[in-house]
Amino acid sequence: MIDKTLIMRKINLISEDFEAIKSLAKLSYQDYRKSPANEVLAERYLERMIGRMIDINYHLITETGQPPPADYFQSFLRLSKIGVYPMDFAQKIAPCAGLRNRIVHEYDEIDSRKIYEGLKAAVKDIPRFLKYVTEFVDSF
Image (tube, rainbow, N blue to C red; front, top):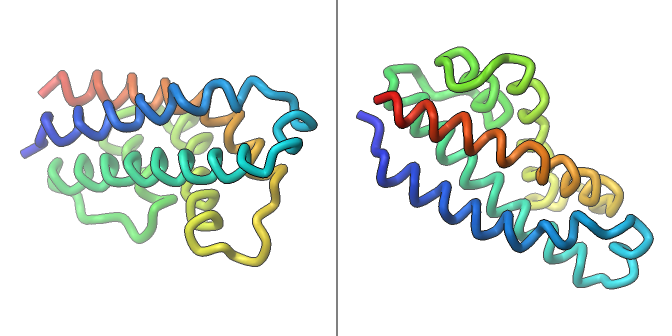
């Protein structure tokens, strides 16, 4: 059974972090790079938001009777298969799982341009993700 309270709590936490990154996302890349704190903040907020999105994914997948996906990337694709959002959006947002992994596991050096691009993508894609999830959960 889908736990709407859990999902809404995660959505609220994502929304709070989202508000904090909007000002960073408005900066030009040059201005973003002027302060090392900007990248640290962006990394941490992205890690938290994407992690919570993945939590939502796994909850929705398993609570709709599907087996857990093989990895985080697949969890975004799987939401399309259970009807949360269209496949074209799934393919667009799924790479954020790789960004989260690079941040968390510090694979080699983290490319500041990739973080900045992830930040720019997040301000477009996260509101859509939250809208799709909310509509899906409200249908139960």
